Structure formats: structure tokens, C-alpha cells
Image (cartoon, rainbow, N blue to C red):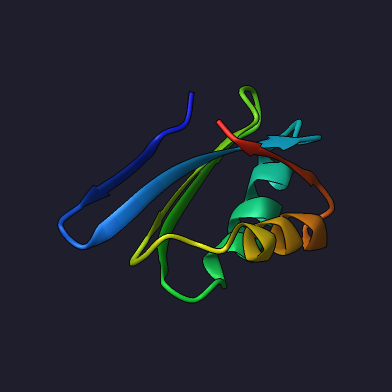
Length: 79
């Protein structure tokens, strides 16, 4: 299921990330994704492998993949 909604000038997208197992992992992924232009919030949940990103506009998936890779994890795709 892909969650990709646009409300009041923002886009919410849920991604699946493999390899997260703890709060430190969540922080690493959240930190890298937060640096992408237009991102206003990131919530990573290690137990589900889901990362919810709220941004001003749809993000380039390759930029998201690069940020997740930089954090040391693998972007599986959209949830």
C-alpha cells in the first residue's frame, strides 16, 4: 500500500527502510532525511521499518534513497 497524500501544501509519504533495529537507527535515518530540501518532519519506526516523511512537495526517490544509504540503511520503496 502506498501512502502519499497531499494536504494544505504538504505531501506525506511513507517509505519502507530495511535494517533499522533501534532508536539510534531511527535517529540516523530521520537525521539524514530531515536535511533534504522541503522536508518538514520525519518519523522513523524501527519495529515496522516505516519512515513517514512530510515535505512541501513530492521528493525525488533517488534523493531519498541516497539519504537512507548515507545513514547506513536500504530504502526498499514506498510502503
